[in-house]
Image (tube, rainbow, N blue to C red; front, side, top):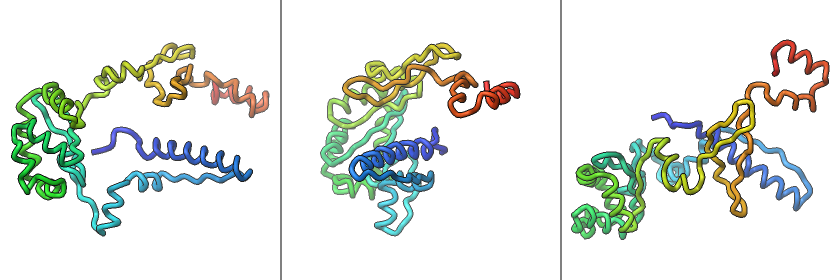
Length: 234
């Protein structure tokens, strides 16, 4: 499956911001500047995280597992009767609680499932058993029980459902930026908060050529007039 957004591009931007901050801190200490060199491929390799570690330690390429976790079972989506949910069982204690919720407390003492290492080895047997049970009831019922049991889980929402989620509403994830040539534009707000204040841009993205006058800071007036006459800038 193709990843939904340009992960390498976005994360290279994030790493670049970190590199700039590190260079600024170093300059404050040593008085020396820095040349920052970033590559999309380097970022992709860094983002492999535990998958790269698995390969380097074992000498074997990780295999495709869909949405499952290579090192933890069960840690993946399951289809409830009305919508998919994701369940992240991070340790044996949580698995024992999950087993009880699913109506099979004996799984927690079964040597085939009792430890995470055993569950990883029994993935092909265990996951279908769990999937059949989750399919019997709606997501809200399962999620309520999982939350009560302290098991990380949540609904798999569409984008619009996620933006309307109570947590997203409480955090003010959706903002309206206005004042530009495009008028009010619905946007996702910045996730960054400093001293309790979110760092949001006050204006929406500009329309084509809307801020063309700023070119006057770098381009001579006659050249800027020529560019405008040619329709190259607005």
